[in-house]
Image (cartoon, rainbow, N blue to C red; front, side, top):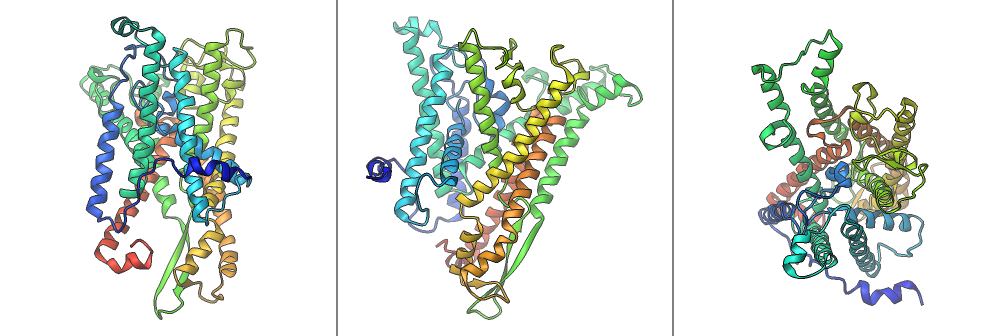
Length: 492
């Protein structure tokens, strides 16, 4: 008896959001998308009942723009479990250990059920150490006394709320994917990054750290008396870094521009309809063919590694120094976990700014940077390949889609194998190059810093997802105006 036969009764009974029976009008899709976005913002501003105020640490803080959660809220775990489950399934699927045929409707149901089950398990495994170690989400003893229960009872209550929040974000993602525009994961990342960028531009000291415009207003009116002369070391540092932040502004605008440009760079393969004379089209193979979403998988893998190190450091008093030495802020300053900790800001590598501990030598920073760059470039290429193969974007799947749509490549026989060979000339190479390029851009953005201290990966994701969302909205509007196109592309 295979594992599919054993697991089928469970996987086929997993709760699921029903797909719409027919075409969903564009306005209704926008309403669903906007409604879920409002719910998301609402949940990120609700603290679990029983949580001690102003205590605990958020080690995932440096990954928040990628994991799209909010520390100390019901969405503490964010999309982390969804991404982790995707990593596991992609690795198992890439090694052909699952034995599932994604073209078989029965196996498709099993795959979706298995993914949902893994998300539920990972949500529990992620929330449990955050709550029960008392390191990240400590229980309020006053609440325990008022309810007449133990601190462990309050921890159970907090765990249940965080777990439910993780399950809610799973189904919110499914609702957007089936009833809205784009994907829920992409929508939540845009929301999280946008909050940071807007805060980085417009926040004032009364609301937290001063933003870009507030800092320059203080400089102009004289409230912030600093030298901005580019001819002195102090003035140049003030101009490029704090409080001028010109370098962060340049990096943010550069990433916006380069991602939009990269999205427009493509190889267009001409197509013609086999039966309708004069009907022509093009199949675009973009430079970032796999999109920047595989970067979520790479950063989530790094986040899980660092979370493990933080957990070991807090619970293992005799942890060897070669594994990691942590400072009071919970950041590794030496050892194995230090070198695997990605560069997140310019203060992580610019030792001349005086914000790096004296025990961290320049050669250690160079090794850490080299590992991070290798991890992102190689990991970006590998996960891009997995992403293309598992999402039906590979040469074989693309050839079948072109064949089923009635199109063919002019000058070639109308045969899926022939079309597949043509696609193999472009898709694998472009996938690897695009994945590596995105990884390189993410590391560069982290090195130089961005407005709002958004991570380079988060900024790349937000820009690319927004660009694709714009394209999808334009496509939806086009199909709304011309209903016959829905039938042609199979969206009816």
